[in-house]
Image (cartoon, rainbow over the protein chains, first blue to last red):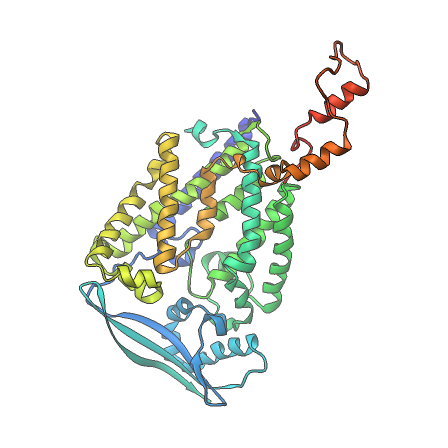
Length: 144
Length: 319
């Protein structure tokens, strides 16, 4: 067997204890911004069974009048990234041009955008099950 | 406890795990998590630095930074998969991939599917030299695998803790899974979400499995393998219903498996075509060859016997 020296073991034990301590502290008191040792927040929120489920999307209109979704494929920005910063977009709709800029960089030569909308779709829930009904609301609009 | 932390494993398992992990990093860059590269085009005013980014004073990502990391990390991770220069290449991959992940998670959405992978990348450079098929055991390698396993299990256990901390007991009867289906469900997801109470029952099941996941360290090998199989099955269900793959976590979870037994290249070399090709170039020992009866005795027939007796994989350093 290829054994470890006692020094090699001591260093590894210290590293192990440090990572375990930081990981536990992250889960006890940390926030998501403490990645990679923050709390394991995947699907950790308890969503009320009778309140609507909100799904955000960004839509754009270009100079030809075509309206389309400005999703992750088009802008490279993930939906959850938009959702996390939704209050910034509401307070300052001009920030939507950053999403448009990301689209323009990824799609050179496409017609320029003249409008970008941030839309929230509220899907109705009853007893934890979707009813299929929904309403849309514009949270922020930028127009050239 | 000390013995458990350093439980020796065959070096062949370390070699195989290295190949798997580093090939996955390359595949992750171009396929599984290819969206990280998209952040090159995102304006800096949408950057939301993580704690680690602020502590290390990491720069706001620019197209140059993102593209440079991508084009260095891709060949280096493929080179690291050979197992050569395991320290130099291993640490380079860890540092670059860690920065790559910081770029990934610094725009307001943090993924929780790669704690085990990051720990594997941080510990594999310390696991020592290892060749495919090598049977000698190693404590340094044992520690690297154990740490990865702990990262994998912590992902489950700490997830149940986070549910209790942020969602409370209401999480069990809430609409978390229904919400997940509405937001990102597959056709199958939209079918099962309509089965009365199935989502809440599943939430009880998830909480129970996550809370008890550390038992995997205390059970006999057969039960352990069954539990790991159950973990994989769980991810199969989540990908089929809510398109959550947790693939980096699944790859790290291979640290529980006897990977040294999976030897695709050795198997490939044993194919009839290759063994015929080799035999054609060498003299082959046959019945009736003279027996070598003293040390140092050599001769045409004895040499022939030696060369043909060589195992096909003994010559390879790594696969």
